[in-house]
Image (cartoon, rainbow, N blue to C red; front, side, top):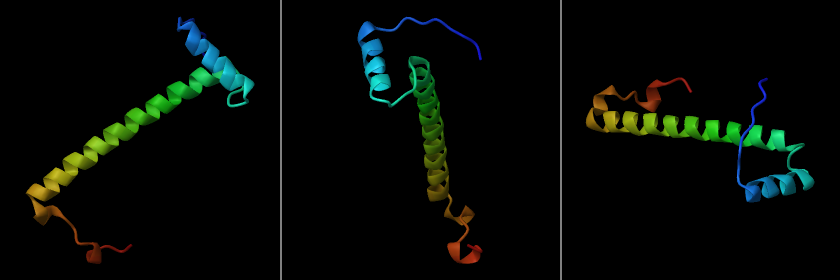
Length: 74
């Protein structure tokens, strides 16, 4: 891992410290890493949703490309 220094508002540090004190995170570092991981997951979910919306539009515009569920071995 690489160590980085960052500047964040004092109020945010207080909130993170409260979360650590409450046992939600082991440390400030753990909190920041978890928050970043959650943000990355959110981005992936948004990209997946956009792809689903695009595919739904494609299927709506061209229903012949759909495979009936009856034809699938599920």
